[in-house]
Image 1: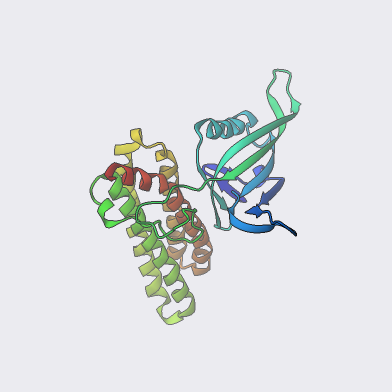
Image 2: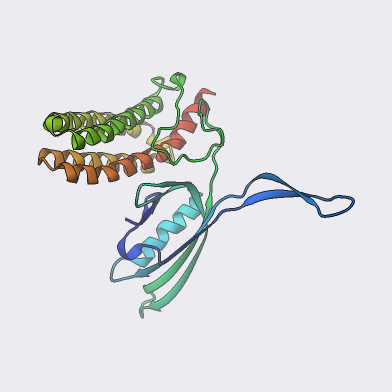
Length: 281
């Protein structure tokens, strides 16, 4: 996978043929009675990404891929942008989509097309209890802080608690994998410990899934959270599967996807954090 924008995956033939980003600061210019004006930094511009992807009917249905993009624009979806290496670039909205049909069929369907996207950074409001003063999406694999007062008071509070538990268990997996890789004497014991940790993580996420169904009708981001949970459980099971085979190297490699999946889960749960804070505010 090259990158993922929300549930839109840029992979293999759908990987961008071109991608550029723009980062800038903002400055106020103060005139002087004599000489050159002075600049004062006032903040940052929103980051912007420009992507271009090529669609071919031999590998996808162009109309469906374009519809996914259009729906995200129409709904004003805030989408986490995650690179294939697990790096979270932040939250973005699609501000523009330009479609160029390069080849069409006689019935009007698209055979090949080029789609250009403009992504603009979305900076959410400050979350109650968050230590992230700027409100930016965090690139670290850490959960957004959820105050104790928001937990265990409703299904949404329990979902957030489950996601935070999954974050903690995921960190344990990474740490214990490192220990197992460097301690041959304890390797088997540590591998068994990791499998138990993944089981605990999956149980917490499966409980969150059940609770999510209770509030799905009132939460626009439910599908994104459900997708992120499924991805995390699958990634955890892959790590556990390699360990069951005694393949530590395979587990370490598969753990990269688990880290990426948990990062996506943190971002997807952000709207739920806001919803819970709003209800209690």
